[in-house]
Amino acid sequence: MTAPARTAAYHALRAVTLDRSDLPAALQASRQHLVDERDRALTAEIVTGALRWQRSLDFLIEHFAKRHLEKLDIEVVTVLRLSLYQILHLDRVPVSAIVDDAVNLARAARKPSASGFVNAVLRSTLRARRALPLPARPVAGDDDHDGAVAYLGITHSHPDWLVRRWLARYGFDATERWVQFNNLAAPLTLRVNGLRATRETARQILSADGVDTEPARCAPDGLVVSSGNPLRRQPDGIVFVQDEASQLVSAVAATAPGEHVLDLCASPGGKTTAMAADMDDTGTIVASDVREKRVTLLQNTVRASGASRIQIVRIAGDASLPFLPVFDCVLVDAPCSGLGTLRRDPDLKWRRRESDLAPLARSQRALLQRAADVVRPGGRLVYATCSSEPDENDDVVEAFLHERTDFAQRDLGEHARPAVTPFVDARGRFRTLPHVHGLEAFFATVLVRS
Image (tube, rainbow, N blue to C red):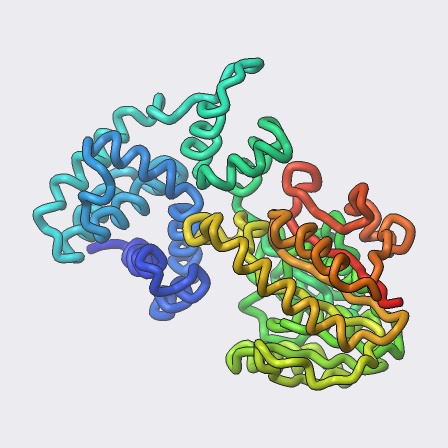
C-alpha cells in the first residue's frame, strides 16, 4: 500500500504541474483527508521540495531516462520528480519504500507499462547519487558566462532568464548566495498583534500551547517558530502568519495615531492590521480589495485582530477610486510577479516568464496613478512589491515621478523608523535582498504629495 503522504503529494504536484492550482491551494486540497499531522507535514515537504528542485530533477530524469521530458507522460514525470526529491534530499525515509511507492503510484495513475521504467530511472540515479552529472561550479576567475548560467540555473534549479538578470546586476557570488537562499526551507514567521499582546507576552502564551519561538532578527513584532505548530491553536488574534520582510513594509508606511489611511490590495490583511496597531486603533483605515474571496479573507483577518477602526470595501479593479483626496497615507501593495518570495513560493519559478514583467508594470503604474489622486496635499503614497525585479520597482517609481510632478520621493535614510533604516539603499528606498540580508526580496518607497 502506498504511503498516504506520497499519494497526497502526487495529486498536489500534478495539479500544480498542470497549472490547475497554485501551491497553497493544491496542498490544501490534497491534505484534507490526511488525519495524521506527520503525513500532512511530509506531503507539504515533498511537494514544496520537488517544486524547489524541479529543474535539477528534470535534468537528471532526462539524463538517466535517455529521452526528453516532453516524450514522457505527465503522470510519470510527476512520480519521478517527487520520488527523486525524496531520494536525493530526504535522508529519513528508506529508499526501498520510496522506489516501491513510485512503482505503485505509476500503476495507480493507469500507467502500468511505465512502472518498470520508473524503477529503472530511480535505481540508475541511486547508483550515481555520489557523483550526479549536474553542471559544476565554474572555476574562480574563469570568464565562462554560459557555464555560470548552467550551474546556477540547472544545479541550483532556477530559470535561466532570472539567473541572467541577477548575474548582470549583482555578479556571480551574490547570485549564487541568492539561489542557495531560495532553495532553503523557509521558517514559519509570525507577527504579534500589538492590539492584543506584546511580543514577550505572545511568546509566553504560545509556549503554554507547546509552540516555542524566537524573536525575529529584524521585524520588531516578528517571531520565528522553532518548534510546535501555531496553526493548530484556537484562533485568538494574538499572532498572524506573516513573512518578516513583509512586516517591515508596514513600518515603512509609518502610520501614526489619528491618521486617515487607505490600504489598496489589502488582503489577506497582515499590513492592514499592523498599521491599525501602529495607530493604537484610532483614526480610520479603509481597506480594499478587488475579488470577493479576497475581501472575505480580509474581513476574517480584521475580525480576528480586534481592530475597530478598519472599514472594508470592495473596489472594481479598473475604476477610479470613490474617494476625495483626504488620506494621510495610501499604501499600494501592488499585485506583482512575486519573484522576491521564491523561497516560500517555489512554484512561481516555473509559472512566471520574463514576458510577464511588462504587463505587470503597466498595471502597477496605472494603480499607482489612481491611488495618487486620493492622497491629500502633504500626504504620502507608499508603493510596495514582493518582486526582485526593477521593472516592477524602480522603473515604475521613476515613470510615476516623471508623470506626476506633484509628488516627490522621501529619502527613507533621513525619514524612517529604526527597523527600516538598515534596508534603505543609496536611492533612499527600502529594499531587502536575500544575499545581503537573509530575507525575501521586498521593495517599498514613500512618495509625498506637494
